[in-house]
Length: 237
Image 1 (spheres, rainbow, N blue to C red):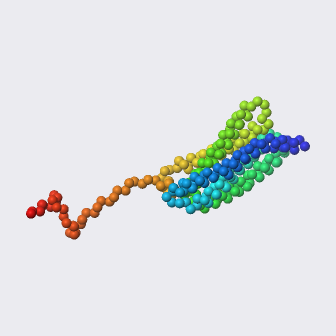
Image 2 (image 1 turned 90 degrees about the vertical axis):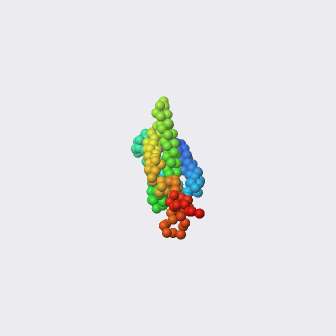
Image 3 (image 1 turned 180 degrees about the vertical axis):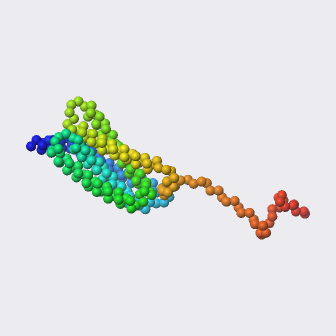
């Protein structure tokens, strides 16, 4: 009876925070990429060579992004369940909820990343760069909010009723993902400039081409020699 009561109280405490985080992530992952699609289409219109895989890559990255953020939410719940207060016997429902998010997220993310390898995503990385930067911003925003909340709860007076453990789990999961995405995005953007010449969407300016000099008339040809120069004597009238 006590274990069931403790489990219910723990789920009651984490439900508002989890609902708020999931609502924000759903809004960002559903409506944010619409702006990215407009930007990707505008960049493709300006590119000298059209990208035939643009729409396919965008759809695959969209679903992969949604699965990625679902995996982060499930990972946060899993870490909180491990480090959170309460007996282990009272955490069964939280473990099941965490794995119910992690398993489908891992399946969808793995399948879509595998399908992206069959496109020109690495040769023409415009869409990948957009989504990688967007994921870094969204993940960093959630991680930063979790960091602020963690310090607020750390210096709070009295018991936080498990919310400090939730903030710590979010800092661990989203902070680690923030660092990993920032490292990947930095490597992609700050890559060697010599690689950019291979991308159809980035055409480096080449050196100015000088027109070839006019070919000199061959000896014995039909052309007349110049008059009054220095190579031939002047013509006497």
